[in-house]
Amino acid sequence: MTRFPRRSLLTGSAALLALAACGNGVGSDGAAKLDGRVDATLAFLDSNYPGTRDLKEKAVGMLVMPLVTEASFGFGGSYGRGALRIDDISVDYYSASQASFGFQAGAQQYAHVLYFMTEEALAQFRTSSGWAAGADMEYAVNDRGGNLSAETTTVLAPVIAVVFGQAGLLAGASVEGTKYTRIIP
Image 1 (cartoon, helix red, strand yellow):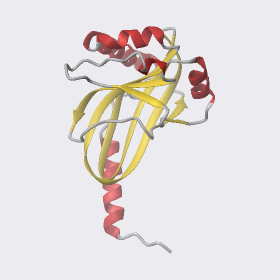
Image 2 (cartoon, one colour):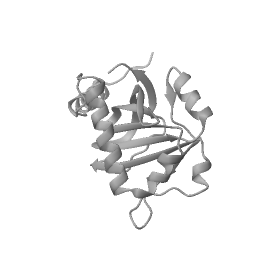
Image 3 (cartoon, rainbow, N blue to C red):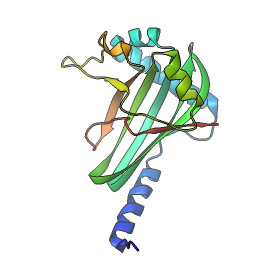
């Protein structure tokens, strides 16, 4: 029988409480409020990272997560809500969650967009009961000039992730290992 010391239990509980306290601003006001946040996120992305416009035009669908909150103190996790857009119309809503354990402490918030570049990748995402971001995903990242961009070779990937707007005390943000689940807002 594995026994966990009380200190570990308290540390894990504190991390979960910290995550719960870091509300991501998406209440239960439904789809209209979430769509407004998605629209604002896409406008921010277009104006601050014009290199992503090409991705948007070539993608068959985009999952836009306006705000993901991540917190940890040994144990950690992240959570956010967003919308799947096809032809600029929200067709489904999703939550993104991730759990972690290790030497980590802090909190941060960030936004991300998953660009589905093939019909097959989009169909696989939509038909899964809980899709997890994994190794088949490419990242478009800040270059030295501070502009997000996608190389021609990156556009050939089935799913491209763009993570932006990081703010907080944790270093880096990644969507690898994040589980996406369809929700009703």
